[in-house]
Length: 375
Image (cartoon, rainbow, N blue to C red; front, side, top):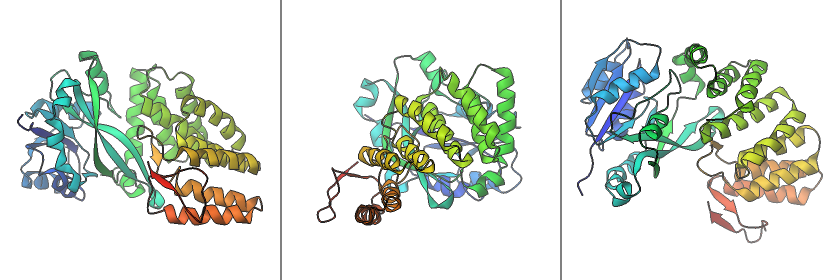
């Protein structure tokens, strides 16, 4: 079978700093580049054209879907890959993509979309891993919906209810959540405005309340953010699973920021009941117990998180939760309980695990013969 062709479709505005790195990371695997520019005043358009891109200059219409779909309309490849300018595919892994798309299993299993392993850089040096769809088979019925936090999956399911989303072990690195990039693009103000418009148009679409809560959290408007998360989680029908899991995690983290540890523990029970294998929720429950001064219960919850190991890739999980960060915090908890032996043990193991963030414990750790298994 011939290798399929790939169209890269992007929407950009004033991305001269990041666009070259993004395009270089995929230029060896894409057959065409389509850039929808929504009003750049820097060298973005010139850079895109230097990479051979077809540039479509389109006025901003307060809709990410409108801009994305304009690019999709021009795509001629068998598959469409979409990226943001502050994202970069792992160059060493990218070469595998066309080979993977050509496999018989793609056709036999009715795979119409592809997820990639996203690594999002966070403030303070942390990272968060999750699998996200960034590729779709080129069909005119597959189009984005929503002004902001646009989704293509609903239209895919409507047109082809039996279709499947595949997953490849190719990483995409994302810098857009760093404060400097949020400020640079004025993302919070822009997203807040679009979300309020969206809620006026679709007041029953509760996912917009979640996204609005995220923006308010970034603004440190904590009470307002909590109100939005509670509205979203009160009736989460129709939520994408990844969004629902993220909403539960955000609410617990928000309550930690507010020092409301009793509510944090109470809500963690509800969250863990729905997502028992989401390690971050167990870790956060332990933080809540610690905040309330219940060290024994905090140790128990932290040990549960450690026994689970890294969360499955469908959850937005902080790197180190379930491994070295959880191990470190468990060592700190044992120290506060006066258990120096176990504190030293877990802190030592945490330092050994730092370079292996996807390593799990295998049973109770023994410092004389540490046993790990790959996650």
